[in-house]
Amino acid sequence: MIRDTVGRPMEILLVEDNWDDARLAYEFLKEGNIPHRLTWLWDGDEALEFLHRRGKYARVPHPDIILLDLGLPRVDGRDVLKDLKGDGELSEIPVVVMTASKDHEDMLKSEQLQVDGYMEKPVDLEKFLGLVRDLKRFWHADLILPAVE
Image (cartoon, rainbow, N blue to C red):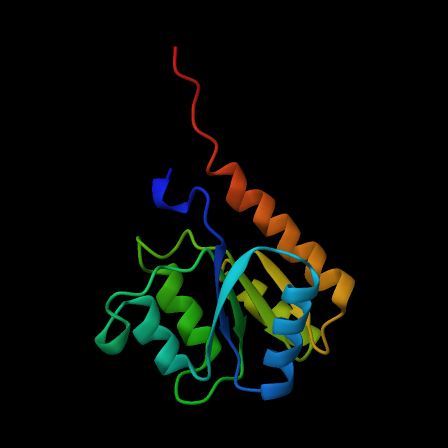
């Protein structure tokens, strides 16, 4: 268990190049009353810099959940996902892929890239909040301290 997560808001990394989709995700999280801190990054290259804590991101916290678009500039979302899942330190971070079509979900499944959820755009408020709440429960379950005997 990671002790530095107890009692703090959830760290959410949103990697999305579309302003309207990013704003919608922000509004949904705010409306869902989920204590969080959101970091929004525009492209895949910057996401990798952030996740690997390079350069200006050397001191950022690792996210607890990643909301990832696939069609990103510079480095594609699938390449970000492959890098993330291939890194022992980062591979356990839950990832929700935000896709423009059902075809992307099928493609990821066929490539056997492990994601924790899919959201088809345009995102539905109730589905979005339900998925984030489920991941929040998963995140909090990891925080439960074992009983001391």
